[in-house]
Length: 333
Image (cartoon, rainbow, N blue to C red; front, side):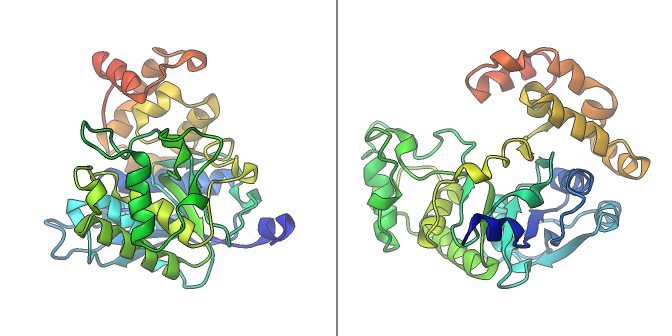
């Protein structure tokens, strides 16, 4: 596929919306998409888990959140949780792929993402799936008697009949976490959500239910999606993102995770977009029902938290930022 063809290929966007924080974040995502990428011609789908045996309560969004999303031309589509549910809500991004039109290219974004530029200009090659590299070496976890990165990752590639050696970054040293294919699942894309979702579900449930001997002492909550994702991407002929995708986690999107982290470390552009899209009364009256949004955006606590940090000299570890925010009373989720 040529770069020109990749740039012009239409695609759908998927996010997850449900009761609680994710519904409000989905609304912010939709508002930022319409404000900053008005020419986006694909569909915006919001996957919403439905009540069922894997949810102790009702996971659906309140009516006012749903109506605000639909006013922004988002299509809210329900799905039934068959494998994960409340015990592993990260699984919504796996099972939620089922709501997308089969055979149409897609990009998934975590709901705690803002669109800050025209993402329709990104030159996706949907025949070569990829995912976010804005990650830390969170998995596998180094343990006293663990077999090492190579043994653990190789056991997973062997489990699913995948070539392990071709997944490695030869520029990184052996037993260093960046040598191994590992993504943040905050965004990923592919050519067919039905095929991608089926493979993702198969790999994730197999890893959860029957871990390889090499990884039996490894934690999988919350890392299961990020353990399975590189295997899925590799299986479909994908890999690490190239420079054509730099706008994601760059000038075009921001996976902020939580509002205190957004105000502490993200660019002035991100803060500008957040406050701009949260300002209209029809959006504000909904968002103000969520206390962290009310306090951080509308009562100015976010700006006060931002003043604690120098964006040109941030702490190296996210945990250090979190601890400072907690110490100063600005931590909320």
